[in-house]
Each structure stands twice: as structure tokens, then as C-alpha cells.
Image (tube, rainbow, N blue to C red; front, side, top):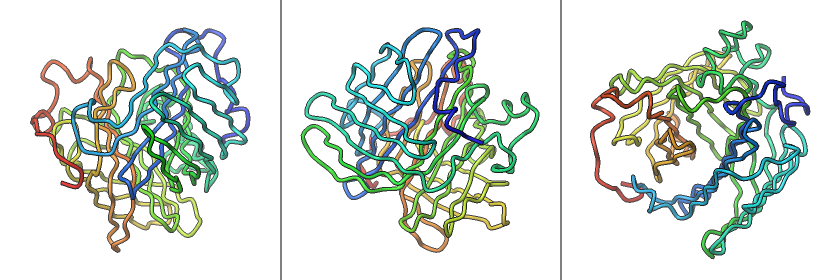
Length: 337
């Protein structure tokens, strides 16, 4: 169970440079095909914070085609994780485990001011009373987390985000559902695991959120193993018990996605998706990530939007490790193609 205490730094007494605590905070403006995020990695053992603020609005393998990128790797770590301001213009405050405020004033007339309010209790992947896939043995829990020790502590939270963003002088209203997360544990940059993180959000507060083990040495259709996830339907948070994911790749990026999630009631949620924006995301210098905003359709025809991420740690995937389904190169494609 996630409590107020988990909003503080979880720094161990013997902290070293591998310890990491993170916030992922993403948002969509679907009508403008705009996808933005703030990603924070706190390294208490090094006294530094990596903060990445990005917006994308098209499908491209070239980072030059992002609308906006502000990545700073060595900001000074704040004293308190619950409320802080960083030198790059980010201000963050947690009101509770399911309510946050995020502000940013960057460069080139770019800023964001949003409130994030959870529509359910934080989904603790290590709490058996919340997640049917949770493991009570600590070693098994880490092994099954989807991201090794990096997810030794982890919760997901689908939020209603409201506010405004401005990207290079153009302003947008934000009113969307988006899934955020907070993690803590040893997060080494050598031996980091490939993993997948995929979700979908629909206008009537219907949500599917998933975490996947990922083996990019296997062909498309055999790469993903379900680790954790949930559905939100009719106001109920339903833990996932099983799932399947097939991603047809264009290089590191998705061309088509087919996702199923079986929830704790036995209902199977079936979704298909295509990317409307993607780009190479490098949250760590060692890990390029195929990162996309996805347009989803349910088996009943509902339309929604969400995220697909697949992490490719370079020390793992180099040396002819990647399957040819992923290695195949593809030309730049424009939004919607």
C-alpha cells in the first residue's frame, strides 16, 4: 500500500550511485497530436537529478524532429521530494499519493502548468491486496517487476490532467487522462533490463495499463511477457491477471500494436493501436527507447490515446542480439501514416 511516506525520498543508509528514484509525468493534447512528458531521475548517491522535458507531434526516428527537448543530467538534488524547484525551471508538489502539481518555465517560450489528480488509489505492484500478480517473496517480486531492482518500489497512477502548456510560443489547453508512475530502488546503468510499458485511455474513464518483460532477441509476437497491469472500468480498479502484447516494429518503433489484458473479474480487454507520434527517447545515455503516442481502438470500437515504450539497453542489445524484425530499418514516416 502506498502512503504519504512513499512521497519522501526512500534513500537507504548505504546509498551508492546506482540508487534511483523516479517520476514519470506524461500528458496528451490529442486534437493537436501533441505528446509531452517530464521525467525525473534522482540519484541521491551522486547528489544529482536528471530532468527531461519533451514534446513530440509526429512519427520520426530523428530526435531533431521533436517539437521541444530539454534534457539536463546533473541538476542538484533537492532536500525534499515532496516539494521542490530545480534550476531548469521545474517545480513539483505532491499534495497526496494521488494528487500533484507540476509547473515548468523553460526556453523558447515553452512552459507547462498542470494539476494531476488520480482517478483511483495508487496501484502498488508489490501489494497482493491490490495487484493479483504481486509476489510476497522480495526476490521474486523484484525478478517479476518487469524492470528488475529499478522497480523494487513502484506504483502506477492514472490521473486526470488539467491546465495549460505552451510549446515554442503556441498554447494548448490540457484535459486528458494519462498514467503516471513513481519508482525507487537500485537502477544500474549496466545490466539494465529491456522492458515495455504500454497503456490506453478512453474518454469515459476506461483505462488499460500494462508492464511487460521484453526480449528483443525474439521475433515480433514472441517478445513480451505480462508482468503487471490493471483496467479501470465503471469506476472500478481491476488488477490484471494475464495479458498478451504483439508489436509489429519499424526498427525500434511500433507500426501496429495488439494488446489484451485479462482483469481480476475474468473480462478480457482487447485493443489495437497505431502510433500517431514517435521518437527516439534516451532517458539514460545507455538506453534508447522506442517511444510513441498511440491511437487505440477497443473491440467495441471506442477510440482512445496512450503510450508505448520499449527500452533497449545498449549493453544488452548490442553484439547481434536484436532480432531481425527489430533491426529492419524504416524511412521516416509522417503522422498518421
